[in-house]
Length: 328
Image (cartoon, rainbow, N blue to C red; front, side, top):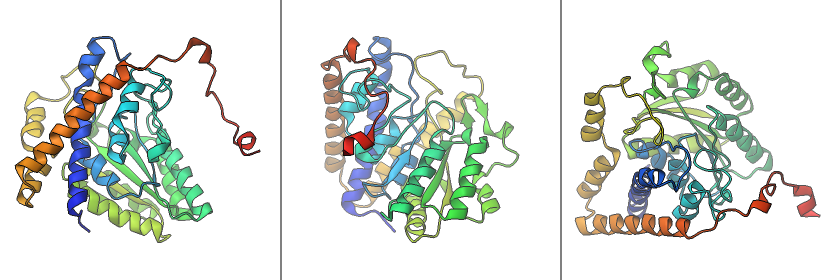
């Protein structure tokens, strides 16, 4: 299954939006406008967008602490997302979630967390809910190679396999858990092979190739919607930036030559842009998309800066919900 012309444009726009949005953050941190640190998805855009382009608008996803790319890949608006990072009341979580604890139900983001692997059981639960309600929805649990060694992944894989839940477990294997190389923590390098223990498909894809991720996710989504259960996809990808931006991070764990190789030879944006040109999309068309994304990021910054901080007397708001009371 291949992306159609309009979908290719949208995929490029979303990848570019992730890159442009996140490249705007370091200056805002330095200016004191974003508290704490942020975790960048620069370099991993094709994995996120390729997977999300295979989903319906009402499908669910859970992300990771590297949390801005996932909602943008699913189609989230940039302005309330930027406002959230700046702790403003107009943010997607009213300024209470910040960079690592986002949720945006408007695009099916049911939660992202600083706790490694925490989104996996949420996505599994969302898949169970969809199955019980008969909605035909699927959920995608994004997680990293570090989370692949968390026990919760295998508990959820087992449950999803037994009950044939419509869940796709998608590992963004960027080779490092913070500063720890996966080669020192995984007995064998291919996380997808672990799917065999649950008798479900395990697929390895080039995470820098948007089309490859899209096609693999489409197969997994169709399987899930048919009631055949979960799949495990491992996207071999790479993050260009350090683990976190805004705090000191050691860089000795990987070489400058390795980073430069991925930036020069394996940049998913450059690779996909070249593919679009080869497919007949002209330079003026792509330049127009690039201009519109740059403007959208500028508008998001202006919106966030112009938004109020939450009122002090609202500190206890949104701590819990009472859906029964809301229905009464």
